[in-house]
Image 1 (tube, protein in one colour):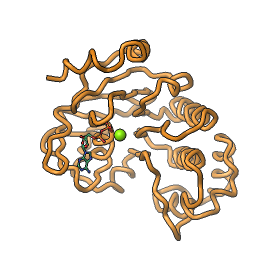
Image 2 (cartoon, rainbow, N blue to C red):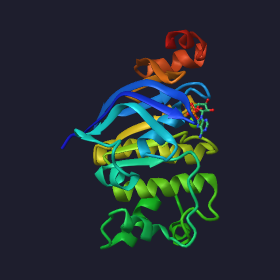
Image 3 (cartoon, rainbow, N blue to C red):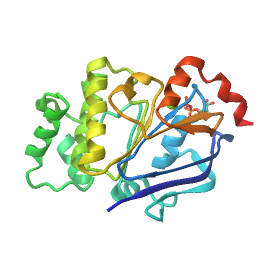
Length: 242
Ligand SMILES: Nc1ncnc2c1ncn2[C@@H]1O[C@H](COP(=O)(O)OP(=O)(O)O)[C@@H](O)[C@H]1O
Ligand SMILES: [Mg+2]
């Protein structure tokens, strides 16, 4: 079944400042959308608003997954409906092991250890690292790979990843990008990736690239837009946001 994620005219206030000023974006199952934009343009704010983080006040707009309004729902409910969010800084959860977290998030416990092992192999992660508490004593690259294991087990309809490339070496970046690309065909996962770097796009093929500036998406286009950005930077797009 094909799913649709519709962000419509989203306005978000943080610490009494208007940060998002009308973001609209529609994506379907199996698509890869990439959001690029300068620091402070509101990319992480969008990710936090989608996940329902406290302190991010929605003043206008809607976010619907297959027609269901998500903005009224608590974060765990959003996740259960099929939205997964990978944060820039994955959290350490002492006292909880990945398998427990996955089962609590709705994964089928039958055979889960074996599936975790398979998913870990897919991203070249030593499976024994997943016997530790969630993210505790893992490097940045190992945490991102562990997050890809979570993705492969939970199989969300849409995965939103904030700055997936921050702090990753080339090998980890490639493993993450390839896992995401595979997910788009394995279960038609829709991927919304927020990134600064074009390097990610060598192994994750975007259908649409959106440029964010000052709280709005000012331009959307095909993969060739990444080359324009590389060449000209964000400055030519800045004036479009007023
Ligand atoms: N928790 C917060 N408290 C105050 N200001 C914030 C907070 N989060 C984000 N902002 C502000 O919102 C703007 C957009 O930030 P952010 O969404 O992190 O941008 P990006 O991810 O594109 O770099 C910035 O001006 C930032 O200072
Ligand atoms: Mg950010």
